[in-house]
Image 1 (cartoon, helix red, strand yellow):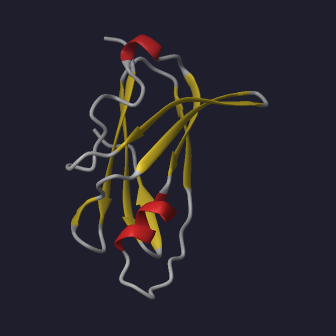
Image 2: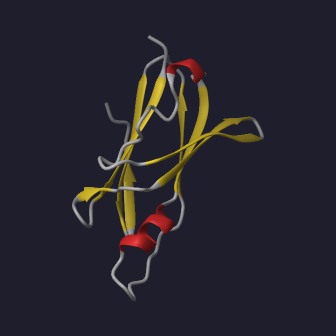
Length: 116
């Protein structure tokens, strides 16, 4: 099995998947920061395919950028101020394995972890 990357975004303030949230994936190497994929979350808060499939996997440094500000603008009550904009998460994938990086999102904070 080659490595690959999946993600999942849950809106913890509303208690549901974050639907329609745009995600960008960057490959980082030295001073290089290159966008290699983008996707939008589906009705389950996941991307339809792995954001980094096995065929494109390379060990190294990556960054997922969750476009949280745009998503939150669409779900916050009228007049409510949002705090978060883009949420970048940098991490290393050094083995050929399934990496799952979920985001638990609310209007005023977030958390992440290496999932399964």
